[in-house]
Length: 140
Image (cartoon, rainbow, N blue to C red; front, side):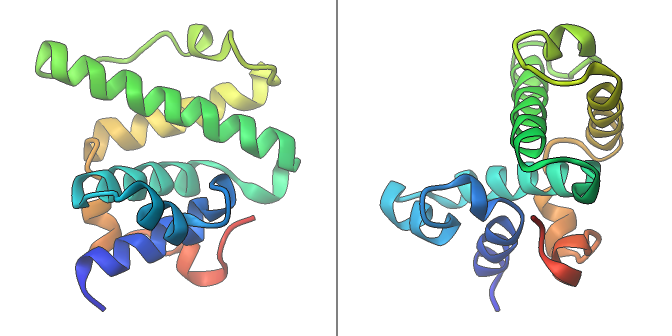
């Protein structure tokens, strides 16, 4: 399997539920380029590595995904504007979402630590096989 196909497969396993149909369809319908596929694979890795799926209801898992996507975008914009990203106010990131703060702050903290350690290009670790949760059993 080539690198792009591996990233598409990983994003589908981790985030396929998020898209109408699945991630394979979204790639085709939206004519995603490699950069967009890499970004979704990175967000999929962020989600899969920080959320303990068995502890969240499907509604909370959807909201946790939205919060982690917001964190990723915050860091992405911060990096673009400042050349680096700093730690956002995680409580502030949670405000627009109807989530239990005590549980979701831990998810955001873990997500930020992952991004701070590895950067936004988590797709590189996916290709290297560093993230295995989705491979083992799929998510959700």
